[in-house]
Length: 233
Image (cartoon, rainbow, N blue to C red; front, side):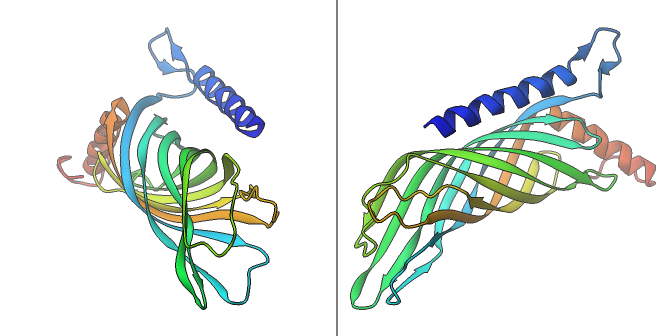
């Protein structure tokens, strides 16, 4: 838990510094370092969760598990370089377990996931973006079925790094995918094996707030500069 508290404090410092650097300018010119707009997005999708486990028996194989990933994300968008995104997600991690001579098993870990990323825009239209960051996660519950790995205890937190790329289909709809890699050994049993989470995901998001209005204006200006009527995104 100390790792979670430390990460949350670091997260608050990042958010505070970002807000301070982009606070409103009373002169009416927007913000001190650019016109930052804020918004939210609701996201949901699928993930292929994996787990790297050391000291596996030759009789045991692991395969990715198709799981749900979804939540809400806060957006701070400067419309020039990129945007800061901080989410709160329900995440399912784990793996399918197959052991010769034993019924197939399942390891499922449910987390409250908090990803923090910065997305950099690519191109003048600001539709395409890529970026990365990290995440911290608190274990909500776990479930095992016919497990041959003898997992008995799990650490109540996880943390790692992530990379993301996406495309803004419309000012409100975003399709994005990425990967996560855990740095924490989530196995707290006496076996002391090394067990780390991994994930590939695909999300569809619906955005709200002033940041969405800003992208609508950006799309109109870009279209007009390219010779269009500004109505098509």
